[in-house]
Length: 264
Image (tube, rainbow, N blue to C red; front, side):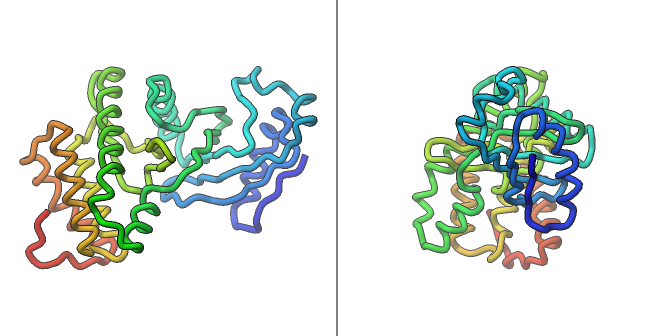
């Protein structure tokens, strides 16, 4: 069994942790392809090179609830609490049919997830702005995002008795495929916040990505706000209480100047 990776700092410890699982599942040629950007945890993409003939003589992965996977995401959590909360949410939401990664295996502080092949929502939006796509053409994506969040609020309320907010809601937490939008990174979801907090956070993040407060980003954010308000019951006074302090805080952290007299 071999596990190969780029000579990145800290990857050797991941290799050590991966060996028992890789051996048990017959992953003889496992490659750590890349490390995803994450502020709170370590998230990696793995690739398993295995021929069909090799696969047939190995441990049937169905015995441990795993189908044949060539690419898989492994997430190494900074705390047990974060792991347990996200796993509970992912399993519940996956059972409802909402598009979230499926939990495959858990090994100590490692969680193995299905890899969603698509485009990060942030990358998609940045490409659209760079290529001067009309903001109106983003409506379909905005509707998909808002619909996903409506289902998220409804399913968490039905399961837990109260609706959860996404928590750290930004364009890096969604992946676009040809047909769907997928939610990832749910560890900050909580009943302590509200949909108003989610909308404020998403709008503030969109406006302050580099380059900040461009006419395209302002128009996109206003479209998102209008669509969100039209589809999701909100307390707009509560939104305003959250919005301005959150935008100021995020702008200060990103060293962004808010345009004078800016209004959403």
